[in-house]
Image 1 (cartoon, rainbow, N blue to C red):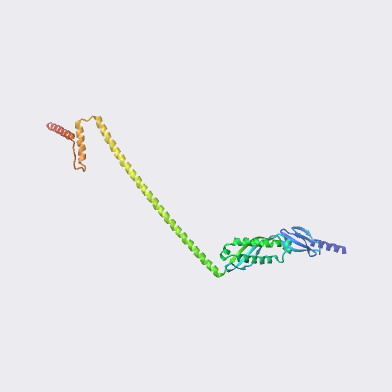
Image 2 (cartoon, rainbow, N blue to C red):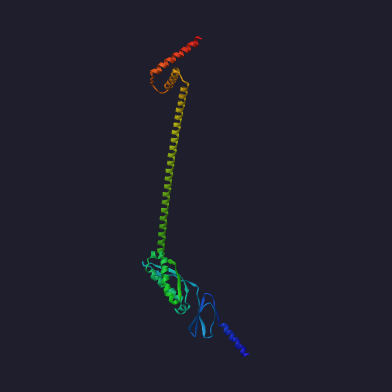
Length: 297
């Protein structure tokens, strides 16, 4: 009976001292109070009573959100700034034995580092230089925490809260700046509108001038074509007259008809050459003879 009980106790001791380390964790094992080993992911066995798991450490990235810290700028403005730090344990042994309460140590180190950096900047620089402040803090904190087995991956200024009166002044300044930009945009819009109107009037004037030009050209071409056709008709008439072989009497009659047309115009004086006058008399006598002959008959 006793051996059976001893076997049961031995089995329980063996099972209770089998340790399984999960993923992304590390166990710090001490033997007789001194550091013995760092267990990584997997199955491990510790010696009962002699060995003990001193600390279980997460190797995941840790987000530390620290409360706002009062800081004073170079131009003596007191403000509240809170920070967020992304860190990761890279050496479980140093993390366990390097510093007592590592997170508390990082919080205090963050506060002092932030005060030192902000103390060299004025208010406007503090508000517009977040990236520079983040980069400086990450570099300083990462170097300081190497001895603690901690890697600082990123530092962010979460909120920068100036005093109430400065916030009111900044809001007024922002409002004035928005109004100024609005007026500039309105003036630019009016200027653009005036330019477009002027360009439209210019194009309209150009189009009207081109239309008048085209109309004048068409009118001149029509008049020239009419004159040309009249001249062609006259030339054709002369050609036909010459082809018919007219005698002196016909020529005289045609001349008289032309003179009659000229006399119907606005001319006040007509000079008739002597040759045409003789022919005109001859034509008149010829017409009278024809008339008398008809009367006798």
